[in-house]
Length: 447
Ligand SMILES: *[C@@H]1O[C@H](CO)[C@@H](O)[C@H](O)[C@H]1NC(C)=O
Image (cartoon, rainbow, N blue to C red):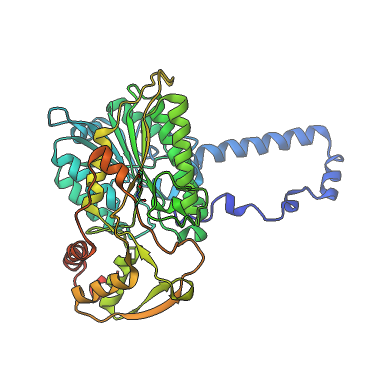
């Protein structure tokens, strides 16, 4: 979906005047006899109808082999990620049920969106390990190499977790999933990530992070029982905030990227659904999550690849040689935070799409509280890889990245004992070990 940049929106001319009907054309219509005009109108309408029913964009993931009606609301944008999907039927439902079955006393049943993603995979495994029911949902889009997502999917399948292939914008599919499983929780991690890619493909951020989120919330609010929702916001909502460490109460009204703006919008939308429908909602502001099975678009990941290949790596520097630093947070610590948030989430209070009482609304920082300069990150990678990096020091571009991030995590510590335990050195060692075993240490990584 992110790569399908030729959306309807992109085709709208920047000069609205182009849409105005040419005056001479307009006048000519008056000379056509009424009968002829009526005839052509019918032909035209007929063509539109035929096109509508044949058009692949008017069908959703359920198009090919399922017997369920397809969603007409799924937009053109989702076509790419939905076109090969199929769902439905008794065998499919059996897989869904088996995956979501709770196997421990007091276990929960969780729908994990973005389950083939980095955090989604780790959270799904952790839930499954302790006996919770887990069903994954992922559209396997090609924002980054989908083969990595497929490999994570195999990992999950080996532990009995099924990932339904579909988009969070597909309301028919989501409704069906809630019909089959009365999920107690939704762990919503599906999103369009990346700060700089937002300039290339802005609509994919709106599609996933706003439209998709709203669609999911609509389904959740109508579900009976309503699930509690824990979802991924982002540390990027702090934007140009300079007060450190970042605390949940700090201002978040100066996002520095469209990505950050859509995550911030998500936090406001969460407030609305909590307020109107009694949905229990917990947003987690992740701080630069890294580790095995990570995202290839993140610096620590492609630095590793490029250092091994002998390719120069860009190291950003702020104005006046200012250090760029990140509060790198190891995936296992993030997973503990996610589980802590799920376990302390109170039940939603609404039913039948109506609010019955006030419900829980929370936002937590999940960071490491120990920012590390990016140049130190490169130093650690050099030692672990035993290869000298070709450093290319560059000015930090003003296109979304902020100079530093630093989380105040005292709120998450107080609420569910969140306490990160992995420093960058230790975490990167585990990442590099995984990287080398997955891609090899040489040219194989170039794929
Ligand atoms: C962190 O946030 C808490 C409130 O959640 C505040 O009491 C504390 O002073 C903050 N710590 C720092 C170092 O700013």
